[in-house]
Image (cartoon, rainbow, N blue to C red; front, side):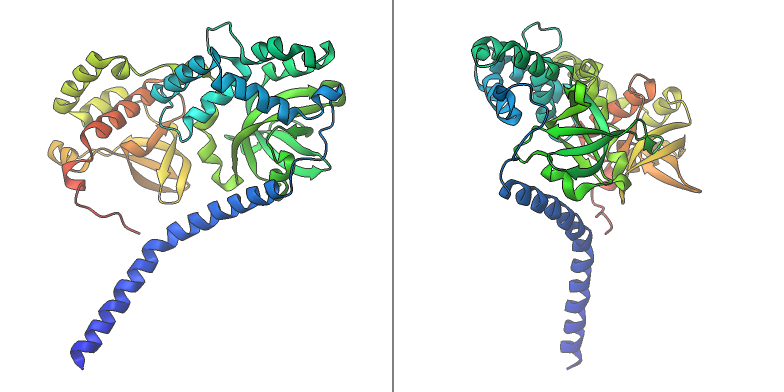
Amino acid sequence: MAKRKDARDELRRRRKQREARRAPLRERDDSIGAELLDMFRAMADGPMAEFPGACDPSVERPEMVKYRMATLAEFEEPGRSKLKRLERQYRLGKLGFLPDIEHWAMEEFFWHGAPGDEWHPLEAFLQGEGDLFPPAACRQLRRWKEAELRVLEIGQVRDSTVQLRPWNLREASPAGDWFRAIDLSMSGVKLYRPRAGWLTLTYLAPWAPEEDLFCTMGYGMILAKANFASLLVPQLLADPQLVCSRWPWEADAQSKRESETEWRRRDWQGWFQQRVVFPFDAVVLTNEGASLLTVEDIERVSGEQARKMGIYFGVRWGGIKLRSGATGIYPLDMSARNAAAFAEYRAYRHRVGPPSGMRNLQPRR
């Protein structure tokens, strides 16, 4: 009897451990599921009944005009090859670690073409189908070329438009006045309806300036303000030159080989101490998700301990000082040496794996 009771107790203990491990995942899944449910509901309602601000019947359904233009740019030459090249540049560039990086490349391509290339998807579309659009409609559609990637606060949805205003992530405050906008996704502004007070990162262009009416271009991120730090690095996508540029160790196959040889014999702790200037602000990955924190110093340990356990830094979270591994720190100033140093260390760990002392450790839940 005692043995059976001990076995039951052990099963209960393991069950509780499994439930504790699954709880954070379930919370994230529920959040994602709620967002997907909102999306499905918006799509189930069907397309928007109207899009205000159209100057001509030919552009009364701008979301369908975008769809036709995007299809041409994505699947027909020469746009198809140019887009594939840009997607590769984004994927191999300095922000290539971001999720859905190729989708962001596609949006940039639709509105601005490829950097340094005179061919433009929208102009090619109008040249091929220009007879369908009178001059006034062509001028209105060309306003899409003025699209900029912006962080915006979401307001109320009224009729066929949504209220938006610029938002400063670092200051956590509005950066401009409210304005109205249509949205070029298939569900239009319906997706914004349950998200008043949240933030979105999306491309924004003028639509009917005389009516102070703008146009969000149909793709982006939507997050609660509490998760604002998750937008700090993606907003750097507004600079395509930065996004397409590569780190020196990613320049070519020879650079990769030479870097890997150097990395394996490098004293990373001493190397960081020579290069990093403190303090600096960074997005730091924590158990609670991404947070904007101040990195104050490096945790000095013996060379043997650094090799076995990795490199750690002291970060300030309110009045508390914590430690964070180097691979989870993303300096916000991409032009400074700090950003290059942490990116190089992440590339090294990506090549060789975690430190030897961490490989058999299980993450705590």
